[in-house]
Amino acid sequence: MKFNVTFSKIGNFFFFITNLSEWHYSCRKNYNEEWIKILGNLTKQEKGNLRQVTRIMTAYGFKQIKPGILTYLGESFITSKNKKEA
Image 1: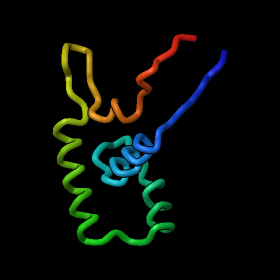
Image 2: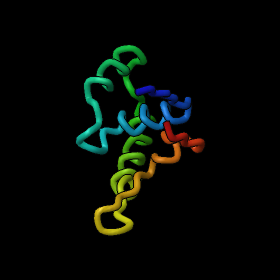
Image 3: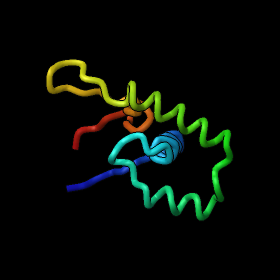
Image 4: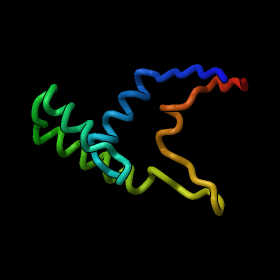
């Protein structure tokens, strides 16, 4: 089996911001602790911006479009437009 993993800069940034907002139980708090150690404490404005991200992601992050079928707001940032079958 062969995997070709690609992650775009915008996809990585989307993950960074949404994870830092801790909007969902799946966000990795230990990542955030390490990022804060490296980048320094967040400013009031940054914390306010992350609260906005939390509100948006809570409202629109996952949406049921049909019974049993969910969409994810970040899908366009983290999936390839050129899907190839192996």
